[in-house]
Length: 168
Image (cartoon, rainbow, N blue to C red; front, side, top):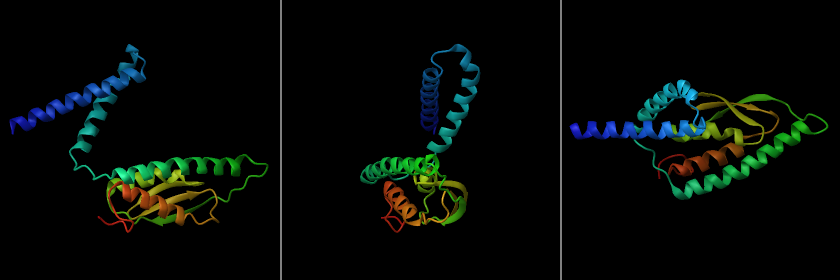
């Protein structure tokens, strides 16, 4: 029991040191930045401890590599599409909202998915409500479901889940 407490303290000190080092880099060594930095470092360390105490999700290297490829491709395509719609001679948008039912059940996968929805052309996650995500669309006349399914399947593979969003 004492060894477990010692390893927790050591882990917390390592986290604090790493976060302090990052803050020092971000603040470019300025001493006056520590007034804001110290509380931020302590809060980040507490949050990271809470996250570390959870069982880590199982990750797939092949799934991660595939996701990185999709991420890069969709980021480029999405950026070009939004630029074309908004910077052209005529504004080609029909904004609206749509609900999308999430198929993946693992919380880590859901969070990654919701945070990556904005990669898709003209799509932004506005709210997560149970098994649904509320989407804001630049063009409500287009169906984002095929792209969302492809993204959701890629995210599921990162976490070692099958395309049907269950465990392999």
